[in-house]
Length: 343
Image (tube, helix red, strand yellow):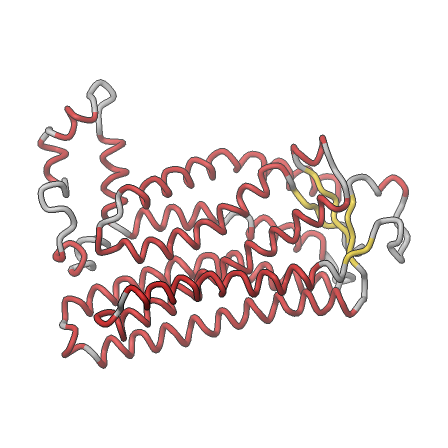
């Protein structure tokens, strides 16, 4: 059973890598080149979220950690690991994976914090304020990262010093953690609390943001209110994907790392790892579908006949019907977001 599960695990990760890469490239190209001016700041926070998820994607390109419960150990499979492996490499991979997960949560929280700030103080922002915001965002990523990295390296143990018996034939490409040690428990509990706290903060920020829009409706106007509500709903949809498909599996994994004797713990952790490392394509697809500028750009790519050049196609009636070049992303396009951006 364990051999079949490990084979499925590696085959699945290898077979999904190509289409995930294509989706990332297409989505990042659209966000970088097709974002209208009124969505520019919003897209920066979206790119921040996608950057950390992209980090997870590239980590799993050559490394596939396979759990060996009830041992608190992993075997590092994958293309790169099959050619070169040390225990330190396995630990560097796994802390990098946790750092990406933690920073995805931070990126989501920052997106909603900034959205609330824009709703309340958007008209009074100065260059100095923007500098403070950038500094705050950097600190929000650096401080938790430093905390979790420092905590992570307190719960490591070499395979030779692992207190439980490991069969000689099962020691290939292994890296382990201290079982039933307070350091390991503290690290996994800290990850759980951080992810849960992020979810609570996001829910509070959503409520406050919608409340602020309703309170300032007479000041900001109905059109701006519609735009802000659209951005909030879009953030809720986009953040719900990594929270539910990435964060929840990570919380389950951390509990199972502690309760290692749980029946089917290895199988459950494998499923959680597959989910946590593969939600990115869903974020990419939803991003393109949600925002009309990205969606129309993708449609134009597939609608253009292969025998026409880009310049020839840009002057055809089919392209001009939905082209934005005449009035590039006016306030109407963005403000009436329910009918245009999300239609």
